[in-house]
Image (cartoon, rainbow, N blue to C red):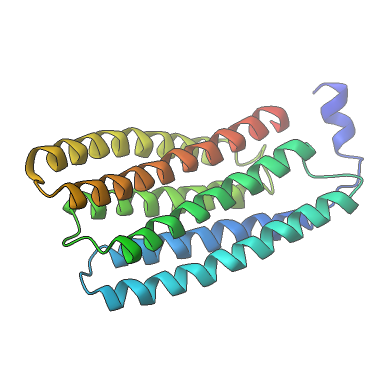
Length: 216
């Protein structure tokens, strides 16, 4: 064990961040589950209801983000690098914003029919959110949980690769089969936002991997 790692055991750290990280990741899972469920519905009234619920969750996420930044500003010793705390918090918030963006666009654009690929991508967004939550919970003891954290991060990477394939498949189907220019534009925008969600989820796990490298 090198000197820096040895000294970490004797330096007091502010552990008030971990409940905030865990609340943020749990909040993300809730929003992803709602998005997944919404893709099984065609009724616009149902989409509006779900959108309101996701909006409420997104507002809670903003509160968690603000509390984390406030804690960061007043803490002298942090569990890991300050810039990593800021980045992790910001990245989780970005995913939540994008999930809300998907839901909002469906309500605004009112596509005639939801593409089956929407459901596939929403399922992957939920799966990735669950993996993010697992990894975040393990950050309390990153050295002891290195394998679990790495496995969850790798799972999100694999999910992102699958999402890319499904996204391109959806774009191909859209441009081959959709003859209405308005519907094509609507669906293409929604597809782009769904794919962005998974990209942003990989950003979260990239930050977690960076933290793990520094802490392990």
